[in-house]
Image (cartoon, rainbow, N blue to C red; front, side):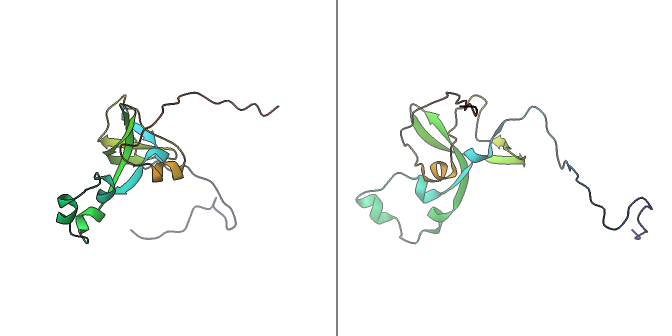
Length: 135
């Protein structure tokens, strides 16, 4: 493709804003980006004791492999579910597999999502908090 001169309407010093859509899909499952987290496989396994602990090599690289997922609320506990993601938007991300429509997921601040542990007890609070800026 040969370079050509720009159109005469475009002049030096002018600027513009543009919204670029890279991909679009309809009727997909999405989650808030802040619900997505990463854990190592070792973090997700229950603690080993006795003979089980001795059987694991201290430098087992498979336990350091990172897994992307979300925490799903099941029987009052946070259960890590590995997910595969698709298109990422400004606030939401498409989930290709690993979740079902209707699953209740844990969302919160980065610190909460990053530090929550598998099987941690959770309390569901779906209250909507409205802040009145006039008071």
